[in-house]
Length: 399
Image 1 (spheres, helix red, strand yellow):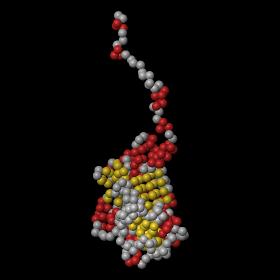
Image 2: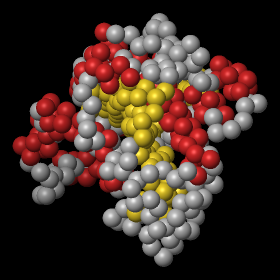
Image 3: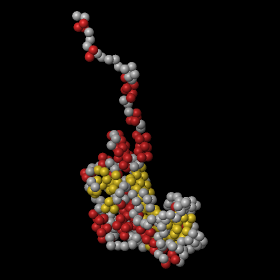
């Protein structure tokens, strides 16, 4: 009888290990302290992130993140590649016979460019019926049902930035970065521009050089001259800032005109593509459209953005771009410009542009501060040095 009362070893209950945390500690560990962070702090982090792809990923982490991400004020959209739609293909074909420095530019600007951006499809909203133009930017990463502009390339659907950004309700600072500049220039040639727009061009500054020589043991290696500035010499050229006679006869002036027109066309094409974004996001204080090469920068402040909403832009009948008004231009030139850090610009040229009507209604800034402030260093210093030289005035008709 006594043996029948013995417990079965297989059913014995073992005591808990001595190192197990007490129940109170286990409950404390179950609390997600991240949820205790205030929304204002999370928004500060999201604004530091900025990148639309990263924000798209954050948006699918939790319901809370999905609610907070649309409140971000600082957004950066980086374009990964360039594709062409049907209209761009037909336009490029018609321009294939063209020759000279404009042919590549026309294929990109006039043909209708579509810039796909990578973002998560979960952040794209339902299908919209808003019309779009053949010249547009596009975002890849969702399904066909997510957007109104679907361009299939290798199985990836691309959407317009208007679709990607439409769920952001409070954007104040927007930066869009293209993968490269539109202007195809030769190796070694420097060409940079900055343009400010309202409903039309407010001002534009262009800095160019036939070649750039960097200091160091490899000085001069890999630098190519355009062939139109063979008269450039290392002794500094004319001390009084005058342009040599050969500048007019060997194609130097013609090349600068090409640079100027090309930059203005690229800037006006970018401005045209921004219309849907500006119309939808009325909270914008600043909009910058640049490229990874640092070739061109288009800027719009709050007043200029509001001007475009109130006063519709004038579009060019020949292409999908904003009409460039009649212009007054000031040009500075130096055959040889050596910067303090040792960089040498051969055939350095600076062009400051303003609409003719604006030059009459607004007092011209004589110290050139708006010109020299257009570029980051070391090119800001180059602009400051050039504006001290002799000024040449030109005019250009609307196009």
